Image 1 (cartoon, rainbow, N blue to C red):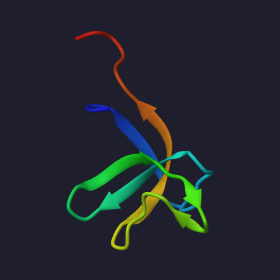
Image 2 (image 1 turned 30 degrees about the horizontal axis):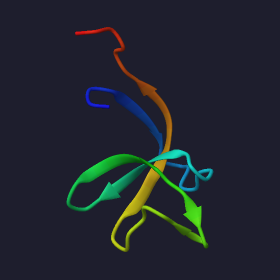
Image 3 (image 1 turned 60 degrees about the horizontal axis):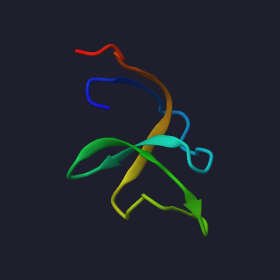
Image 4 (image 1 turned 60 degrees about the vertical axis):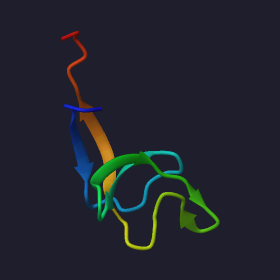
Length: 65
């Protein structure tokens, strides 16, 4: 969500299947995506991308603007 603060535990490189993780994409930067582990590989992880850490919290304003 735009404007949200996200806490990332960079010590956690492994995450449970389907959890949100912060993933670095070279041309897009740091993105929060749901990551699935299938056949020994991460679904969203491309050759040059790397998982930065597991998303542990999100702080966002939920009141209407």
